[in-house]
Image 1 (spheres, rainbow, N blue to C red):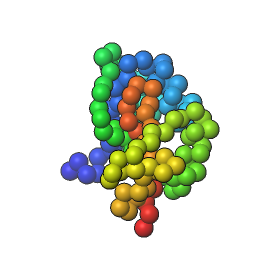
Image 2: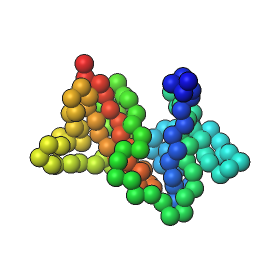
Image 3: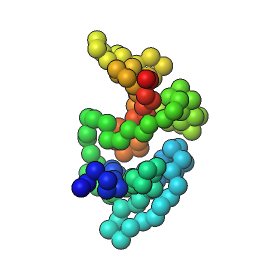
Length: 127
């Protein structure tokens, strides 16, 4: 029953203005509007929604909160870096990025944080 329902990803933000600036001016999201409950929503591909909600104490999640599939990860990284996005780099024995990209089985992935500390990812399938 839920498999066909539109999905909303909820991201906590400490500073709504700062977060909106990042999502709109760095990531290119088109403002969707402020909801009565204080959330700010963005429409995404496939009927999904990304919603920012105020949370004064923030969050400390150590995992990827949202991952966006891209067709060309290198081009996406270049475009995002040109807009001021800073990518994370990792160098662990079983998990290493090269030019910000880690190959994970059948996909390439790269991570960055939003202004509020949420981990975001872009990924590309590699048949």
